[in-house]
Length: 334
Length: 290
Image (cartoon, rainbow over all chains, first blue to last red; front, top):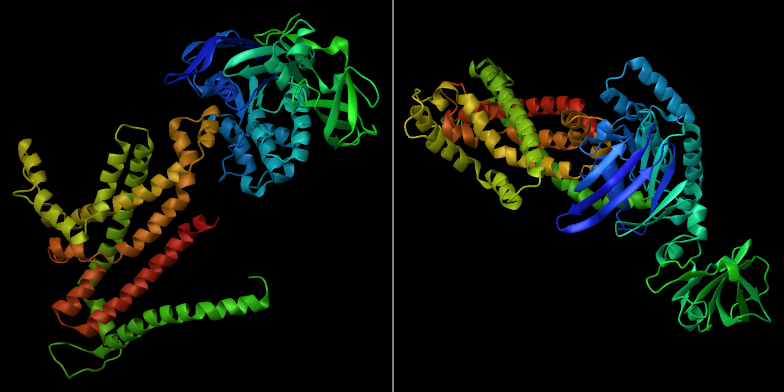
């Protein structure tokens, strides 16, 4: 069981309010991703849930029981740190055994759980090595192993993939997602990478300056961002935001249109511009279009084999039903 | 430094330094060994002659010899225990965020800058003196008989004085080591359910092992040759109760004017230092491997 409820949780460091009163419910078995730019308070929020920081006001409940004043170890949560935080002088086996040893678990039960975790994470051959002798991905798995053996109510991940190279990151992303499917335990995952958020989450929490901007499934956030911040943050490449006269035509202060929702033509269309940089990825081509008179640059996604190049004049047509409209405060107009 | 050529070039280039250091060490050592085989007394000039190992035999048969050996080891061991344990505790204390941290740290480091003769005299006259010392005042204030430290517990008193001098060194090294401990490791241990005591035992102490090794090795080098503190406080007494090997060598060569006997004692001190070094490297040297 791992249902976590935050009720008006507030955090202040001195006079600085990092988290204004915040409500959030995380259901049992959910994979929740906190995402936001750096300094938005997402790590602080995770540390509040973990108990590594004290809340200034408000209440945290885990499975309905108040946990606000419980020490970290008593909350039944396990955390995987950004730096992995393995104990360098202990072997992999001892690292994984550490939480069980601290809990005073019988030796044979410890051994059984270590073997299970090692098998699940492909660590069996490395159990007697030290963390210093492992690669980044293996260290990551040891850190996860140390979390798994405690059979926690929920896992907390603090930017666990940011120290890995791109190829490994994709691999570990899948492994963590599979682990979630297999264990069916609540997971809270903090990242600044919206791709990780979109690919892994059941529910994304977008944070800015400690405020929750929007909560929803990845596709909800993609289809109907609640404001311009979420619109610009979710999706890659970023949504094009246009204001001024063109926006007024749609009765909005700002309109947004995603790069994949603009049709490109060499001969005719609504808007006209000149191609700046063209990024040919094979499957797709991203055009950065200038001189449209709408915004400095519009980003357009086209097919991989479009015969357009740097300097060409292009005509653009936005798909009318995919235009997002925002008012002067940046809020979505339904 | 990969090719044969660059390796031999490197060897040639460091050779002047190696030769210089070698000569620096070999010449005094050879002279000491040479003197130790002579009958060489400053009171009887011109009677020097080769006597073989007689000086060693006499030094060894001196009733003070074993006392001095044991005192040397007790002094080194005692000071090491006090400074390492005290240093760890002080380092942990100084690592806590507190008001006036900078000033407190400077105060803690201060004893290291006081020269040994001065600090020993301060301790002897201002603290341990049974008539006018501060400890005697405390004892009298609570109605106890003042304790004459340097007469009744001379070696323990010297261990105390030397520890006071070396505690800052140990604290400083261990404090920097503690500050390099990754805070996420401590938090991970906290999440894993480790109590503060087991966090210290399982995380902090292993992290400090290398720094502790450095402290022990460096201090041992200096503690084997403690001399000034003994000279200005007890003069090795009462009797030979606080005489260590260094002081015995001094007494032999400069109080009895027996250069031959003193040199023999010096060679024995070198052998003792090497035995201690071998034991230390065996026991804790592996901590220095990365």
